[in-house]
Image (cartoon, rainbow, N blue to C red):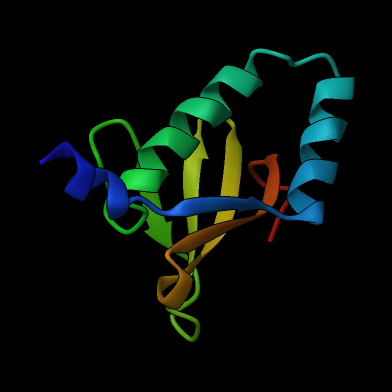
Length: 100
C-alpha cells in the first residue's frame, strides 16, 4: 500500500528565482529557515493543494489556479503546481510584505 501513496507524490523543481531568494536570506544570517523550508517541501510533496494543520496554504491567483503560497512564519514560499507532470515548481521565497 505504501508504494501507491509514494507514487502519488509530487516532484519538486527549485526555480532560479527561488534559489536566489533563499541565498539572499541565508546571507542575512537566518540559517534556521532551511529546516523550515525542508519540512514544508516534504508536506507539499504529499498534498500541495489543501491547507493542513502544519501549513497555511492559500491560492494567490484566481486567474491562474495553479499558483499558491505557503506561510513559514515571517516568510512566504510561492509555488506553482503542474498536475500533468505531478510537479511543484518553487518560484519565490521572501519576507512577508516584500514579495508578489
